Image (tube, rainbow, N blue to C red; front, side, top):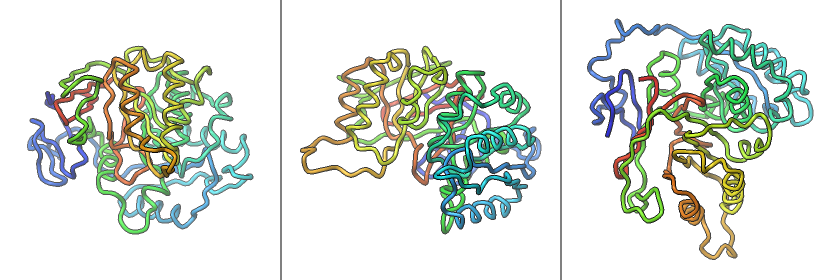
Length: 351
């Protein structure tokens, strides 16, 4: 089932879904979306760039990302410590905390991280969550990926406010050549208030989302979406910064992690009782790992099959999100619906 939506609904086949769920042309709008009378402001946006985690090493990518956003007509404000360096971090802990709080106080439409890496978990106790929540209530969107999962989970756990899993400045907007068009379109939808969902198609030979199922028909309503980077999220187990989300939909992704490490982290979530509380698990992109000869057939699909044998909820694969060029934006902490019919999955919000 595909519910009728206002606004734009993207899938990763390179076309946009119309209100009926059928594909339109690339970049097409549903026929009833009048950009002159839709009620959304289509003007330039104020984007605040800051560095709450690792130091920016690729400064050329940083500059390209800034120029790219400016070329799109946006006002780009750069935090004074965005390029700071303290050992491997973008400044010491106090510097990075101050950057977060300046972002929250900036009045920007979007606070976009320069990059991920590592560093947020060590400063979670020092974040002024009330100030962050006030900024979000005022219309600011905090956007990021990777290590930013720590911030997103902590904000959700401490305040219930919604942040966005999405791009970073350098890795996504600062690429050499042209940034991914779906990523850019989803980011634009967030800026303009259009985005209401994302769809994707699962592999032909792996339609079953539950052990023993031949093909899945699924319709989950009013579930809280949460998740992000698997390693970062798992590191928060047992802390006050991991949200408690009974009846939620958990999405995870990772990079540079061998499948056995992915299994180990999923096992921790399983044994901690996190997975049993969910209505579904969405596996995003797991990239840049290398199998070894002694794996002897053990691979990522082995982990997926094992996970499905351990829990009674749907486990969907190939969510278009992770350390990849083509990524959708996902509202962490938002109430969403999830529909699956055969190979086609659709997650939507804001309707």
